Image (cartoon, rainbow, N blue to C red):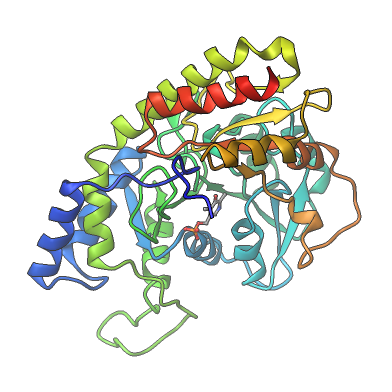
Length: 371
Ligand SMILES: *Cc1c(COP(=O)(O)O)cnc(C)c1O
């Protein structure tokens, strides 16, 4: 077995993380009502330019709680891109609601904003765009549709902490924004997530639902709504606070590494077709994944490309299989762009602890492969 030397996306854990977490454990404030949770919510919400944050135990449960907070229920429809991670449709299905799929656009690899309106029906409750691989979605047309049809917008920003759309942080644009702090995301709490919003009522509902919807006004064990056991622990929040001290560095490092990848790989572009990651003028991509598409006339197949890098100790991933081909959601409608992305895409090493030297090693291996 080959030991992976350059992983696709590993977290950066250092002494400051250890000291925050141990300080939390020593304080014995370890549960979801720990003051560390409130501090982390405040800190992360501020970073997202939002007034409120509700921490939960994963990105998936952030989406689920957000959907429950706006009242999504059985038979309701929520519009999402078919090209996304499985948690996006699952969070809708958990509520007995229906994920309605839209193809992606080649410019941003995000939901095709021109194909949303045709999918709106009287049962549509929300649009849930996904800021894929750290690149912001073109939000203005989505917000206009939401206004026109009276829909909610929940941003799945699980992959895009710090990304900016026309001067606004992602997560702050829709009614609610959802983030993941899984180990490979831009900051981590091991497992974890957060809902951010500027809407006080939705913030209160989300915080209430994620912690069993305990009764108010003195009737603690009295439940008017179906709540969830989705609290984030104090230790997770402490780790999150430590990671927040470096989030700007994490994001800027990702952008610097993407620039280096672009510069070196552009030199070999003549040898075959590589499609580079999107970088729209109106947005800031934070490159959760530095990803490329290998066009059909690239000299080696994707399979061979990945195998060769693997033998050099470089870990890579193929893109998501779109929702419409997943056995649990299978549909026969065509989504050609999502299919193309899924067929051609590769995530190259992109983790927080990746160095510029690592990027050079990866690029050298790619150059050798086509040379
Ligand atoms: C990671 C991710 C999630 C789920 O987050 P977890 O913390 O793993 O539950 C949801 N949506 C997208 C787009 C993701 O990439």
